[in-house]
Amino acid sequence: MPWTSLTDPTPHGFEPDERALGFARSVAPGGYAWWYIDALSDDGEQGLTIIAFVGSVFSPWYARERKAMLAGGPPAQPERHCAINVALYRARGRDAWAFTEHPEFERDRLHFRLGASELRWAVDDRGPHLAITIDERTAITGRAIRGRVILRPSAVFGPRITLDQAGRHRWYPVAPHCRLEAEFERPDLRFTGSGYHDVNEGDEGLEQAFTRWSWSRAELGAERSAILYDVAGVPARGFEFSATTRTLTTIDPREFGPSVALAKTGWRVARTIRSDAGTEPTLIRTLEDTPFYSRNLISLTLRGQPAVAVHESVDLQRFTRGWVRFLLPFRIRIARPRAARR
Image (cartoon, rainbow, N blue to C red):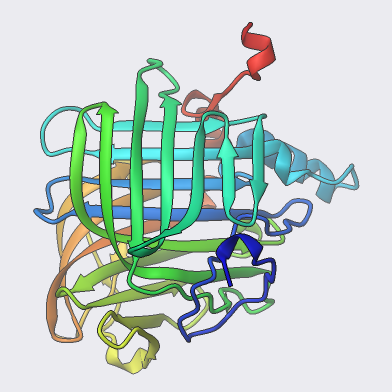
């Protein structure tokens, strides 16, 4: 059956299924959905992350609407706060970072356009792939970020995994093992490397259910990858993907070592990660350092395999503080509708 005719949104479990977990998901008032992509070049020197949101969890304006809704006001509309975050990491030259809320958007099962940027699932003679076009500007300097990314999964999955006890927040490891090609003209950045894609969704703000979490993904050689999710108040969970057998399996939590504290960030945000018992994770580079969030590259051992993990730590208690909410609008740009630019 061709992808363009697929409309069934039912999660399709741990068995491979060439249907994409698409962009037409219903999002509850006050809730969110995001589509996350990251990549690391084969030499480990360059990387990127791209996150597309319906109901941006980091929008101070959406947070204000959600607060009013909880106090008895009108429903907070997630589609009023569609956004895209793009971060490019380079060994030489400045990194590039943009976070834009777009009042103009379109979305259906296989396509999500935000302003001039878009994500589109397609299929060619090499199989399913996610084609991404980026055309954004940084919030403060207005520098352009323009380029294309092709993400090719080894297999596509869609298990629905609840992150909280109430089941109001869900995670889908859609493409845990990918090859990715990136070609940006502004700034100049080209690489091929390992990629990853997942989807998160929820029926309320993150801070209503969580205080903190730690997440990481790492390729274990050329044919395997591992994902670790460590959410406060819930037992740690792990998953292993094999590109050879195209299987996604759970890892017994008893196989993890204890949570290891790394050095705090420049903003004094704690960051922790798990690895094999008796091994010591090492921080390679801090990619993002914000008042409540960090993204990092970490050297570690998982399942007996030395690896480099893309890692994040989030402190949602810090995120709710007034001074942090005050700073957010300086980092997020609101794009004007095209009609307003004429």
